[in-house]
Image 1 (cartoon, rainbow, N blue to C red):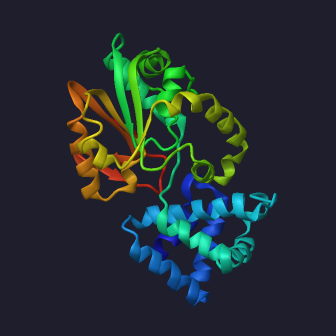
Image 2 (image 1 turned 90 degrees about the vertical axis):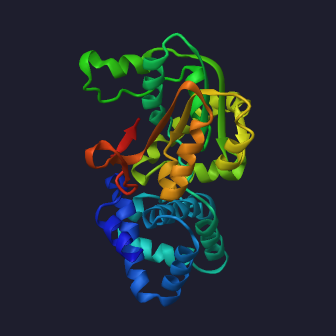
Length: 309
C-alpha cells in the first residue's frame, strides 16, 4: 500500500498536482505517525479490493471531508503544498472527523459518474443497430446519468477520432431509438448523501471548475433517471430480477476495475444470460489490451487508458 501511495505521489491520477501533494503528505505521515499507519493498514487488510483502488478511494474520502465536513473555501488553492496537506490530514484523522473518515474508507466504493464516458457505448450501439428501438441495462450505473442522458439527447464533448471519415464521431452524433433503459446500482443515486459522495468522487481538484456544469446536467436527467432505476446488488439481480426480459446490450462503464478478477468474470458471464441472441456486452474501463489483445489489464492509477469493447 505504501509503495502505491509513493507511486501515485510521483504519477498522480490525471497528472493532478494536488493529489500528488496529498499522497506525499500521506507517505511522510505513514513513517512518522504509527497510529495513523496502523489504522490505515487495518482498513487495507479488511477491504477486499486492489491496492490501487484503495489509494484512489483514500483521496475521494479526503475530498469528501473537505467539501462537506470542513467547509472551507481555500480548496484546492492552498493544497499544492504537501506540508499544508500534512496539517490538514492530522486534523482530519482525529476525533469525530477521524471516525467519519475511516468509516467512509472502510465502507464505501468510489462512485464516479462521467456522462462523457458513454460516448463510446453510444457509438457501438449506433453502429450495430441504427434503426432498432433498443432495450438496454447499465450495470453499476453510479449516478444513473448514462441511459437517461442518452434518451434525453444530451450531447457529448468532441472526441479524438482517427477512424476513416470520422465514423465514430458520426455514430456518436446519430440519435438511437429506445424501447427501455434500466440502470442498476447497489447505492441509491438520488439519496442526498450519495449525491454528495458522487460529487466528491467525480472531480480531480484540477477539474473543480466544471462542477456547476455537472450539477446542472444532473438536474436535467434526474427526473427521467428515477423512472429508470433499480436498487440492488448486480449479481443478485442478474440471477432473478433482471432476467424477466432480454436486452440488446448490457453496459458496464468503469465498474469492473473495482472488482477482483473472480468478480469480473462472474459479472461478465452473468451478463451474457441477460442478452438477446444478437445482444452485446459493452465494457468500458480503466484498462488496456493485454498480450495479443486477448485480455484486459486494469490500470486504475492511469485513467488515460479508457477501453471500449
